[in-house]
Image (cartoon, rainbow, N blue to C red; front, side, top):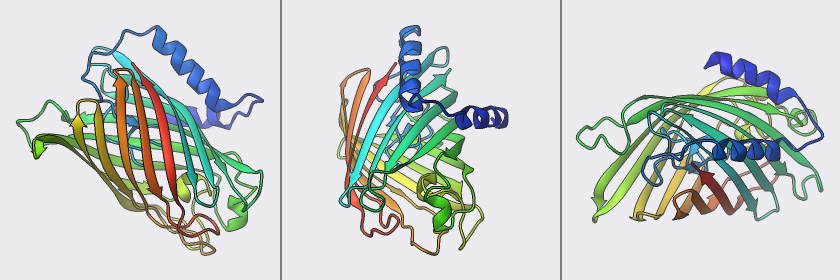
Length: 301
């Protein structure tokens, strides 16, 4: 895992006239056309969270991207858009590859529009992630209390660190987030509907997921913070849920709050997922109470 992250540091620092996000999506789509379709059950790879890992919108889950079994390679390509009431925007594109339902490698680029805080400008955040499933199966281990458990890391590189984050007091351009993720599906647990529970611990010092750099004048150390989510499967193709993710508060100039969402995901066909959500991101830079909406589309194989 460490070797993959070190290699990723070089790759993500390379700048090009091409949009990295669209390149990643194209590579993932071409790769998918040459892979055998996965045989796992519908929705067992989750959707894709804003940093590129398989999970919900805000947090990684312990599941591995795509539909590949323990003898197959799977993966996904995604695009997400979020917008708050004060015109902050976030567009994220990326790809994730799942190997033998055991290892996941993901890459993404987020472009954060600064709205009227800095009109016409944006911040780019590149993320390379790895996730390893340790034990358990969230779906099939129904006779055991043990959830599916995975560990992961995400190396993040802020291309525009000197533009805004450094001026606000951030200490570092790049950083690595580490997490422990657990996921468990409980069949018929809520009035006959299936219930999915996820709980994580994140070790991070990222400001606004890394969009505003890492560390700050208030604190420049790792903190271990919780994230939880729950979703009910209303049908085999439609689920609703909610997420909560705590975040560090490293910058004295602006307070940072937790992030929450209420979401719904629809699988119109096996390989396609569409997610819509109401999000509450708290204070972002100089704007309080940043609520808004989020949509995401994903193609999986």
